[in-house]
Image 1 (cartoon, rainbow, N blue to C red):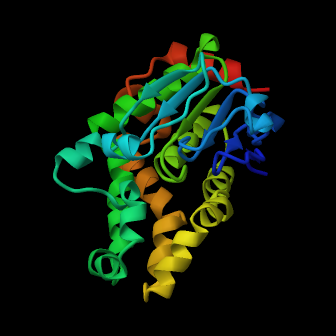
Image 2: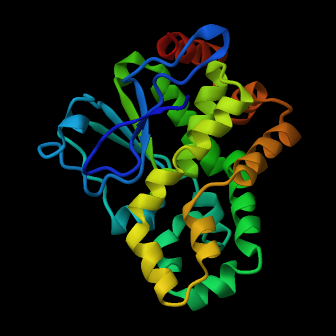
Image 3: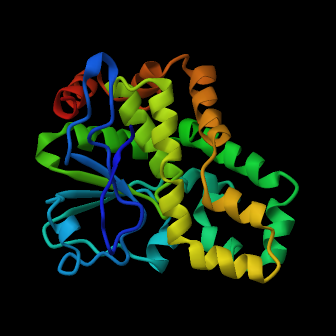
Length: 266
């Protein structure tokens, strides 16, 4: 069992982590922490499923360029926080594929040049390792855990563009701290694939009809075990365990971790 898909008509890949099974027969509480793709089409009036969530805090993991191109539509009274996971990666002069999905899918020739021949798998693995190692990512995920642990933050929704990579790693951290086992973590990570493919279906079709390699499109749009395994390996290599990564790498206190567990575990 994985997180529950929420039937939104204006937000792609919206999922409630509630209901995810944890150690000892416990589960994640419903309605407190949600994940999704970008909120540029969010329409509370036309989307009762989202309105019913009662969101109070939104955390946006996207880059400045992504936010400028597709600004979130935030309901009145909802806090909008920005944690640019990839800022340090961008400052190094490299734009990760995760931050330019739509640009790469618009030009099959450019996609083949930059992503063909197995390059895309290497690039994604490198990006996932950066989720663990770079200061901007650490800042973003520290904020995520602090907000989710705080009852005053209310229901929290965190997202990136497609809601699969930066968001997927955030969900993995939370569920790992709550006691989800490795199989559950991987199942939740991979479970977004149908929703992401649906959200980008027209773009994928246009890319392949223009001569683009369908394997590149799927590797770019989907998530695969080796992507997440790269981040988990980086955690083991640098810190030895997820607990130490959270405490030493993210600088999240024991008190915040315990508050997160108390708040989210049923």
